Length: 79
Image (cartoon, rainbow, N blue to C red; front, side, top):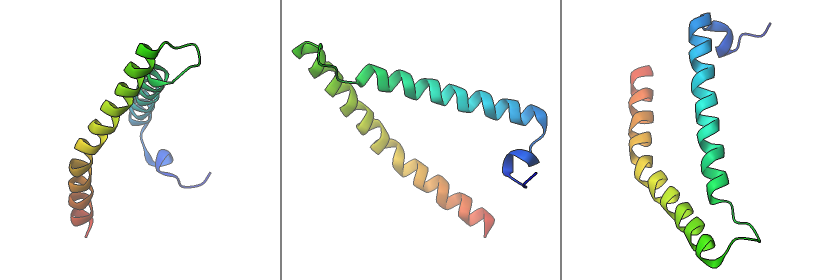
């Protein structure tokens, strides 16, 4: 069996990681389904869905500096 990061985790950590991955996947699917544009959507629903997409983009832009700082700190800790 190849030495992947999952193989190095104890069973409880694997389960916790699986739960976290599953929750993130469910959240993404929910957000994506909410903001998906369909032909049968009314004009107001289309505007709402576009605004949901814009809010998502704004949230990701707002989070990105913290993610970059976290990556920098992580690399500094390793070095």
